[in-house]
Image (cartoon, rainbow, N blue to C red; front, side):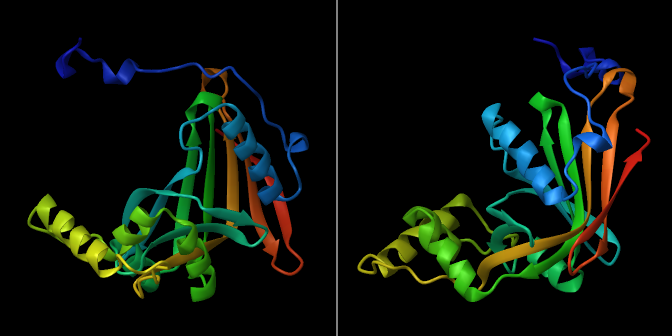
Amino acid sequence: MKNFSDIDIANLREDYQKQTLDVLDTKTDPIEQFKLWFQDAVNAKVIEPNAFTLSTASEGKPSSRIVLLKGLDEQGFRFYSNYNSKKGQEIDANSHVAMVFLWHGLQRQVRIEGLAYRLSQTESQTYYSKRPRSSQLGAWVSPQSTVIDSREVLEDKYKEVEERFKNTEVIPIPPFWGGYIIKPYKIEFWQGRTSRLHDRILYTLQKIEPKEWKRERLAP
């Protein structure tokens, strides 16, 4: 086993040679193209193919974290979270966000820029009701992104919430928890290629109704 001092970080590299990507290979609609690549990731048994990096910003200061995609349609990408979390507060202040999916086994990534909006309480409740009961209780427990004294704070709160809802079959959704939809205006598909001459196809939204996208190749 190497120590950190023995690792030559600058020379950690892999030559990407698995696949190619050309504008003519892609769908005219980037959501349909994303669905194809997502299916490829699922078929390739990528671990948590729905995991993506979500970046938000407040007062010009960016922050990023990994969240899970929980829905996708022609309108955009859906995920769920605590509205009072850091990302929730930053989305309230600035709805422009960025997403990155990395499927390293396929040597692919997808970069997305868009606007984030809260979903309706009805849609959030529908998803919440399908979560495991433990996850429903967990949503009530965590004051996400705030400082707590210890792990025991969470465990004690969980027991309290568990007792509170022990005779409740349908646990109500917390008022501070729900879904977001990210409506994209840019989507870039990146395919790793040899010699770092990667393929990059960028879609830029030109018209909202009906949706019209422009496709271009970017230099790597």
